[in-house]
Image (tube, rainbow, N blue to C red; front, side, top):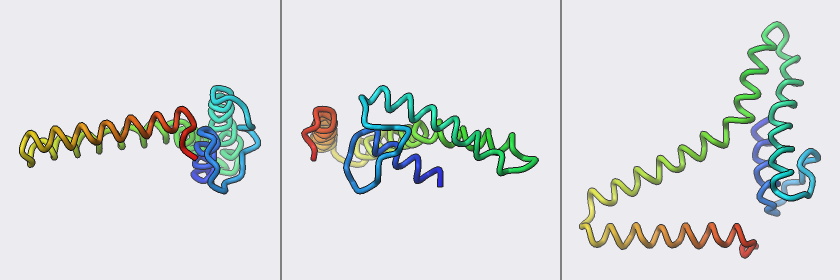
Length: 123
């Protein structure tokens, strides 16, 4: 349940319209207000749900808040690590000029994609 909330919160944060309804604690506000609202919900909702864990409520609170707050950072670090491993493999196994061209092309595609999302050019 919390993973679907986390996915919905991320989609609501970047204001993408993919059929997931908006979350009531995020609203339709500037991104920094949505970030604070999402972080608050990532702490408060697991603390409220921790009561359902009975005598292990402290463990439920720790696990819930950890998942709510640390999940995105972990996913971003895994993505960056995978990207680095891919670039290192390309640079090792391909001829150097080909590897440099492919790495440059990937960097240009990543920069254009980031620009499209940040300037709302993407639908």
